[in-house]
Length: 239
Image (cartoon, rainbow, N blue to C red; front, side):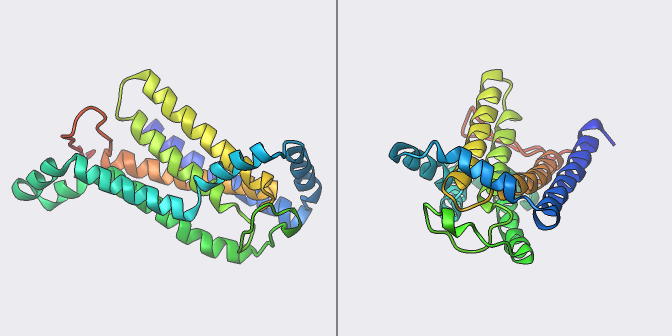
């Protein structure tokens, strides 16, 4: 097993353990003091301008935005590679045609599986939201934060696919930097808007990291990359 796969397995185990520890912290040891302190710290930032900024960032992981983003990405991929895609279907195997859209297929499935898993996970823990802190209305249970997990999985995987598709360091750095800022701001926005406890966000980050690694492993296995140079893009499958 190569260092890459060993690192992925180790990270999966680590994120699962972190999630478990946070769950014990919340439901067994008690995290009220930490959650209240984190919320109070962000209360000092509250203003009309800050409300708008954090609402914008929280929208970036909203379920409707995520669905629209994935659909637009798939449509963009189809239009960008339309002639190449038809060529693959006519001249090559169906397997190659599927590999042609593999990056976005993995991207969409990762987000979809995460969303489906969260329905059961949230219901299983059943932690009520901090209704007294609400700046916006949210429904459902609080633990863990689905917005945070979705942001980390979606934008982290997108940054990974972009970075592995180019040799330009500034593109790699920019993709990871933008993804990091978005994930951080989404997580903070959930606490700022009063719809999650800080421990919900930390647990969401751990769970999002778990699904992100699974997505990265799939990308590595199938050799999925995004062509940033031309409209003709080909995907190689890793042996």
